[in-house]
Image (cartoon, rainbow, N blue to C red; front, side):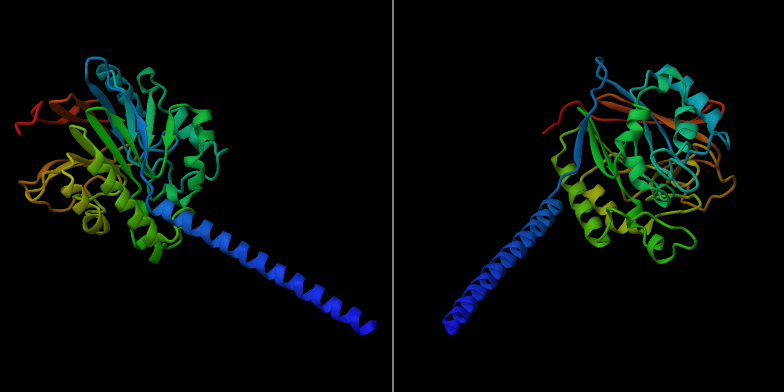
Length: 349
């Protein structure tokens, strides 16, 4: 009888171990499938698309500023005043920020008063109470990146919009905002005394690979007359930082293959326009939102260096379906430089 009970217990124990192992295997399989699914979804993800309608007359106007957030210091407040005046004259639809929104180390959280004192209380003009489309710069990555991406900031100031990479469709013109900081190798290998917030980036190579695929796909799918790409870092620049080799090697071939019109960036604290002989892309820097680097300029081919200004200021863009006009302004609102280009309304093919 005892032997029979022991035998029954062994059978019961074996059966329970068997079912436990089966459940464990099924659980592990389920976790594996979730991970694989997430990877597949991420690898085939498309850039989030937002709509911004042009004016009823078929035009679109906006200002571009970069490298600005310093609690009003280094002439940030004076630049903001002139932006308000020019913004009213042009009846702007929105503002684009090319990054380095808060110096020196981004925001330290969603309750950081730097947001209020460097943004809300600085850009107070009625004409600037429009949507601000922002990208992150390397200084923003030195703080709490998630804070700048948080909808809490939009609740605090409904002008604020910030995402890593995204698309804004304005019918005949489309904007492609690209997160350029993760491309730059030295921020990983030589961070010096800086601490970067890489949450959401790892694994880095996969992040960059996916982003390049997404940008390429978004550009290929675009039917806009004008294609404008915005990022923080330079591709072509005669300023302090110069060309960003990682973008030249990885992003630029995609932009050229998809025939974009403008690449707009900040990072170098200057205003400039470069038009290289081997590319149809116009390279525009608007990084004079506050602290500028007077006299810090490198040699560039005269026939390609259309404009360079080593002081504070900002840029305006006015575009209709057949024509695009840009202008650069200094801290006093003076027009420093103008440039325009045209396109045929309809294809000749």
